Length: 432
Image (cartoon, rainbow, N blue to C red):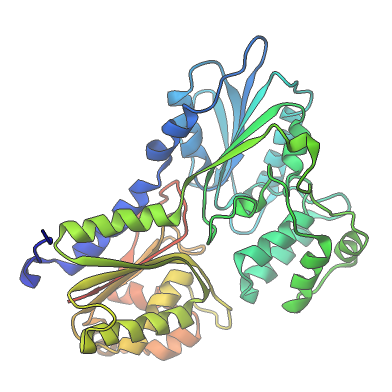
């Protein structure tokens, strides 16, 4: 029997979209996802130790879940973003900078490498990895300075490079990523638990794969830098051209005992949000969990789809909710404030231009849109009229990459604070 459609007058669009976002975040939290996977992992026997290491925006929450559910002794250290810590008793939590690495992240990486020295085949290493780990676990390869790596990272973030390209470069400029951390742990058994922020959920790309084999090469990393015309310091050029930066490759026998589990993904989050829409009597449609591309282009495409639904009932009948995830990019050309979700939503807003009965939300599941203090924002049909009354110029603000300023002026920023998880972008359009 089909679910009855709720009368449109009973739906509070803003609250429904916020509830969907919260449900998406809750579904991929460490507290919900980690215990079941932890139960699959055999504890060390005899004199074996359990050492917990990790990095990412969700690393502290993951460490706390391990402490609450692991049966046996453990110790360790994880590094997370400033403000994303958790109250752990046995696992030390260090906070560092994201998205541009800093000295705190470098020191934490050095300490983690020191901790895994001298392990035996009886020992178990639990590695907790989530999005953001690439910047947080920052240890440049020998001969490369932290300042050089910071400059490359900043240039990549502004270039429009996608996450696969950025992490390919990061792996080959690192002393710890691209499987090198797992090699340092050998001969201990390494089990990696991951929350995926990568479109397609490739485990070797999450946080630049510190404990997984890497098929990419120095030549590919160099090609990415040249593709985006990024200035390459002489030390980095020599490091890549010489092949000194090659990562751990598939088939390396030192990795043969290791395992990994991807515990939470964007698809999990989207399905949880879809369930909220269904409970409100609306039909949800998930477009994709791995959308990539320029945020403003994705915004234009979503706006065109929303209008087609509203005007033609194609490809979906209204009322409905259209949901998507993935990781867009922003090529920064202006001086405004705003991450990729605000950029997406401002592009959508300018394209819809007040079209009636279309509402939308775009937020990052980590609670931080880029480097701002908001998770994202909400668009309402009246947003453009309100903007006009305030003297705002939406298209000019989009050209200036100032989505934050636009939605702040309207009072439509979504500020959740750090969620301590991360499966990247969450977008939903409600068409009534």
